[in-house]
Amino acid sequence: MRNALDVAKYFLCRVDRDAGDTISALKLQKLVYYAQAWSLVLRDKPLFQQNIQAWPHGPVVYDVWNTYKEYKHTAIPQPDACELDFTDDELEVLEEVWNAYGELSARQLEHLTHSEQPWIEARQGLDPGERSQEVILHETMKSYYEKYVVED
Image 1 (tube, rainbow, N blue to C red):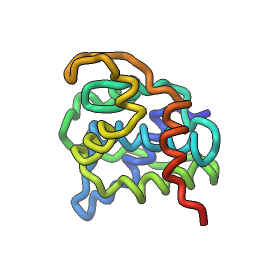
Image 2: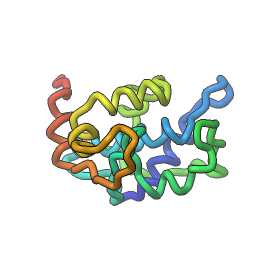
Image 3: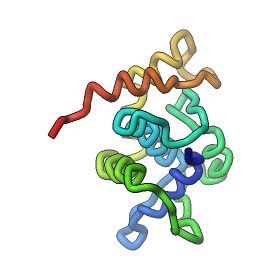
């Protein structure tokens, strides 16, 4: 199983900086979250080992937050090396997530996660700005997102 930082690095390497595209820490967190959710649906297993917590601004992997927190809402630079060693089925999930969510802004992704059951359920009983380390459960993520699978 991967580390969430590997998944974050994948998305940081996908950004087309030559076209003026950027990625903030907020957007990165949401992409990592969706990668985990869709891995649970499409591969029936998690993509990475870390828990995802239901923070006020949406799903957060603490290790990813801790690594990129200095950037807050500014652009995170491209990693020095973009050699990534994902399996074909992992890459398929990552590409699907990038294609589905990569064009959305950080705020659009935040609003989207705030409207979905996994984050809402994990934050149940909390005030909107209240800090929390409540974990978004894999079972909740899988059962919610598998309803949106389109069969070929």
